[in-house]
Length: 424
Image (cartoon, rainbow, N blue to C red; front, side, top):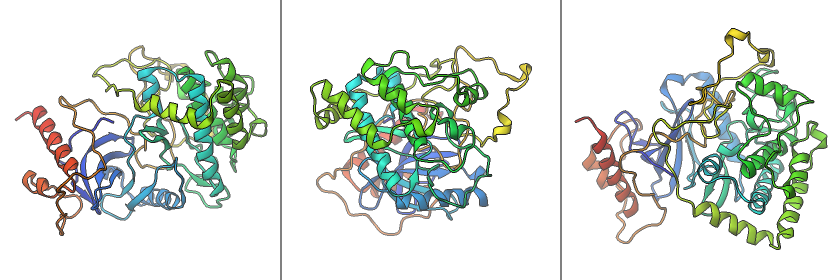
């Protein structure tokens, strides 16, 4: 994963986490690479000061409370948070790898057996969430990170208790990302059931196997209408033949027509076994395939798809009411660009926190080394008395407070990269 140097205005410490660099940004904030007192790497999400108000703090606090209830080997772990800080922040497990959207864009679709392995892993992870009374509601390729130990689901900002009676959105507001949104979710139906995550997983697996989504359109308005139109069948072109029955069921228009997550796991196992493999072998092969691919940074001026949305530009936007989804007048419909995607592809999000699968920023001239959680020999002990959150340490003080040999090396390369592009 590409890491950029801190900007001068960035905080150097938040809570017990020292910030080492920028991982990426979302619509409402920034995501940093952080390190705990004990040297544990973390992804630290921070809300932009310009959007911090009582409502955004309440939403952020809700996300934190939900994260505290989530556990599982394929779910990014909660490490710490402070929604009442001057700059509200949230730290979760750092996964060193690209998201699924970036991987497919750089290296092409996955073979059917690896797509089936991914489906089994993620279906099991979602089943764990559902067993805890939670729905993800925003599963998409950008929210699945392909780390060295296998895929992990991130960004539970839209997660909700399945039987929750209190919500921070109006009764008919739509939350989620329409590229992978179930028809009933797009139509504002409540309460939602586990079937919305089954549909989203089906859309994600279709993208993994083909590079496209069930429905694509030039504008969000057109996309919402395609998703909710019972006569608009999902586009399964290019899908491997052995995955078509599974994807057809998962992307069914009616919630009750979709398979359960247990059935999804069983069907994925059947596809894998038809290739002469065991599920454990396929999972190892998936991790080896995704972890062994080099990351390709986004080049300045790189063209994006003319269809909406671009898979790797997943920035949170505003909430939409179904009444607002009527097609705009002809003069108001933006023409799709042949060279760039629209400004805000992820149309709706319930939380103002930045995306857990952050959008990569322009590459630095000298990319830094990847940080590693392992401690080197001769590791210095951390000194007490860190500066308060929101303050910057001088470079010489920062160098003396690194908590591992690898972290010191990373910080030195980050500073060198920043100096190389500075105008002075």
